[in-house]
Length: 161
Image (cartoon, rainbow, N blue to C red; front, top):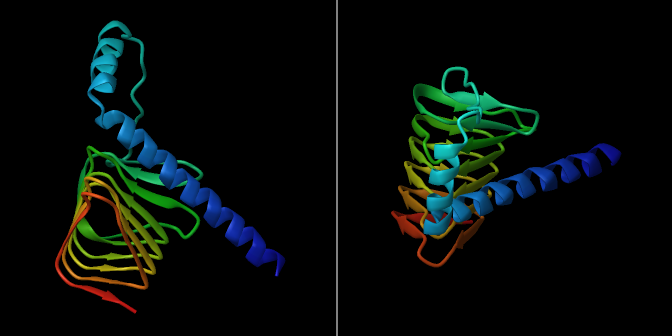
């Protein structure tokens, strides 16, 4: 029982991480943020850019895909969130527990929770699928819970069981 409580607490923090990433993406969509960010980069030369290993960055809570990756399959550990960042483009099937897409994914996705703010082309099989404003899914979706936000797009079939 105690292990289950710890697992549920860990799942809650991972979902909070996904929504923090979503809020950061929403902030970056605003024109004022883009202008401020441009001037900050222009005058702040010593800003460090994170080093990536093969196009991804990994920490204790997440695996972030920051560049274009082509592979047969990408699997994320159960205790981490797989984040495809705004600049990330993935040509592969994805397997994981929590997947947040703010870039592009071309391939099938199998996960417990899938959150889309970018583009996902392929079939999605998950217990929970949420398509945010600006998110687009093209393909077959099989889920038990679908949340489609205003101006979120689903092109294809959806089976809710």
